[in-house]
Image (cartoon, rainbow, N blue to C red):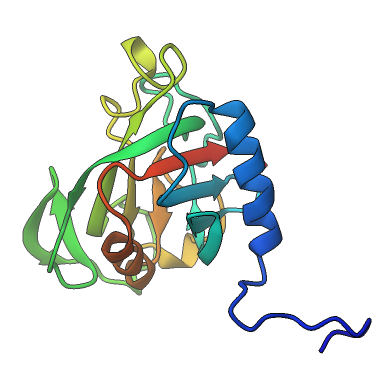
Length: 194
């Protein structure tokens, strides 16, 4: 029971209001896209990834976006904004902290407690993003897919929650496993500076 006498449904996620606002924004901004099923929203200012399904907030996770900020230009090492979809997924069955190079498991494991230089290791799982906005994040020198923009695990979990990547969206290894298992190819991903 809430202080004002209203009850809170136990099945409702505490961030459901955000999901409602997101769905309204998406229906206005991205008309013509099917918003049913899974939708991933990355809040760059909040360094948080939200997982929404059929308009219902399921989960949220801390992330790390680019230390260079936002941008879609090739070789900018920035995180691209706008609408994307998950085009490819890699890493099924790889143990946490397993290092992937060219989306293949190397057989090596990252040290989660390393100190010093961030080696930008890609670990555990990869969800490869494809931009859906021609001229913004699709095509030419702004193509997110050609830039290898991923949602992926990282050895540098200490930096999660702060802009510290080289353009990708980094997640804790356990979190990226959960997300990988929950979302299908083709799921929409929107990255916004809010």
